[in-house]
Each structure stands twice: as structure tokens, then as C-alpha cells.
Image 1 (tube, rainbow, N blue to C red):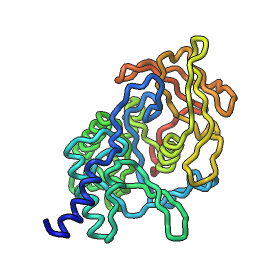
Image 2: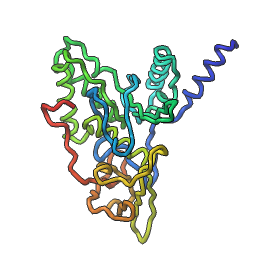
Image 3: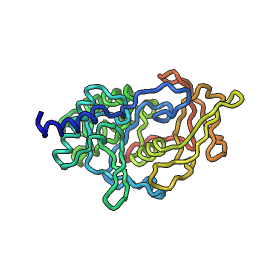
Length: 294
């Protein structure tokens, strides 16, 4: 075997074996991927610099990572793995930088530390079917494409940020956004602004919590949000909005933040995993209103 082939295998084998496809586990008490009852999350990139969690010292950036795998943080098929391999090799070719672990981890964002020691979070954009609709496609067909992507997302349980359309495609893309709003109203797709999806994903990913059963109750203690880079902080109710815990006894589950019990925790019936849950709901989650550019 040549030295070049050995180097390629040394890169590809760990990437192919990398974890990150979020297959559902069956723990008694666990964080749900998305707010109840949503099975998928979608946002559209408006091409502005994200400002969410800036007050916490967290900075999100877009660093040209585009994927055609519908759904990050989702269960992966062999087809998805093939797409991820191709995307990582394409990024290596265009940027002369290997980011296999970023693509194969299949997560919405990954930390990037510069030579100056500054850590930023680079998020990925979905550049697949609904982001690249042909100009002459009828609007009803575009809606069908959006429906197919939403169906795939819900089946996987993933989230994604869709690359924003160019100006000449805005009218056609409206069919996609209309369908996503309907999916949100039906409780299928968590369709929100990009910054909201990033902030939710960050808090969920780095939330520090533990749970215990005491006197027939389930007590969930939330202590902080800690990414290991910024100073840990106690999350506010707004930052915890939508956070959902699977629990074996939702009716007898309490959620405490820094020792203080939350009063606005809703009890949810079992979802498709046949597990009940509780959700922190400080305010009503509203979809992106019609006529608003997401």
C-alpha cells in the first residue's frame, strides 16, 4: 500500500466510525431532541450575522460548510453517510482543510478555535432540494418538494438551517415557507428564526442537569449551561424555552433551576417513542408570521 493511500485511510476510517448520528436512546429520564410535540426543526438563513447568546460570549458564524444531508443531529442512513463523506471531501478540495469530524458528527454547529485562541461556533447550511429550486418549477410542485423534505426530517428527528434563496427565487421559495408554517401549526416542524434554532440547540447541547427519584417524584435539577469555553451561566426562562425532558412519570415530575422550582412546566402525553415528557414553556412558541422574512 502506498504512503498516499495509507494517509487517506487514516483520515477516512476514523470519520466513517465517528459517532454523532443521534439514534434515540431509551433512558428513563433524558433530554428530548426538540420541544414537544415537534419532531423536526427548520430555520432559513437570512445571511446576517447571528446575534443570539452574544451577551453570553457565544459567537456563531457561517464558515462555508454546506450539506445536502437533510437533518443534523438526526438518525443517519448509509445514504446519508455517503453524502457526508462526499461533502467532507469536497470541503477538503475547496478549502484545503479536512473537517471530516465536523461533517460526520452530523451536528448543526461545531466549535472552531482560531490561532488566537478564540472559539466560535460554525453552523452548517442545508443546500439541498428546497434551497435550490429550479426557477421554472410550479409553486405546487415546490410545495411538494418541501413536504417530502419535512417528511424525511420528521422521520429522522433532525434539524437544519436552509440556505437562503437568492432574490429571483424569493417568490418560489414562498411556497416552501408556507408549507413549513403549516407544519409548525400542525405540531410537526419547529419552524423558527435561525437565531432561535441556534440558541435552542446550544442550550440543549451544553445544558448541565441531573435527575433523581425522591418520594415517588422525579426531580430534575438544572444547574448551568457550560460549553467549557465561556463562563458557565444559569439559564433564564427564555433560554430554557422549549427544553423538554422525557420522564417515566410526567405528572409527578418537577424541574428546578439553581434550586428554584419552575411553575410553568407543561406535562406532555407520549409521543411516537411512547414516552411522556415535560416541557419548559415560559412563553408561547410562535411560528414565523406570514409576510415575515425568516
